[in-house]
Length: 186
Image 1: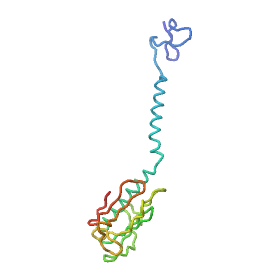
Image 2: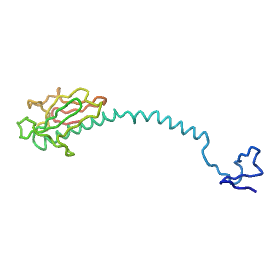
Image 3: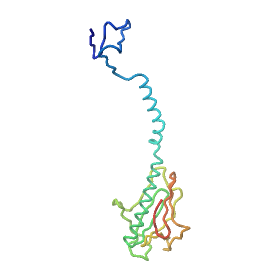
Image 4: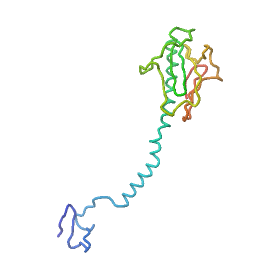
């Protein structure tokens, strides 16, 4: 005959002197985890914390990648706008930002005197880096002509040796602008 106490089976005939419950008692339920299971969970969580937390708390790499992608998008937008509007689009760089402006008059005017409205409605269309992220070297300013080709400040086509390229410090890929076509790529 057995008695139930708080959901656990206590067999009076099988209870040793110490008062511990026996696993071979009919109706015995194992509630909880063993010490080995708890230790293994703590070990696995510790290993994950060692490898994952540096990635979570060091956001510098993510900011560099984001700034690289934003610069790539800005240059592509500038090239496509130059073709669509049949105007000169100027790209100006600082150490941690890039800005697009557009010529208000048709070519041959090289005077980019109007801020270009960005795809999200911001004026001027500008990308700015997060703190501690910048270009590896300040890129040279250049323009896109009405055909989408990169040109210098004098309106001359940029040759293949001087084709524009942009590199973000801390990111391995470089954004390049093809001299002949203006194609913007990584």
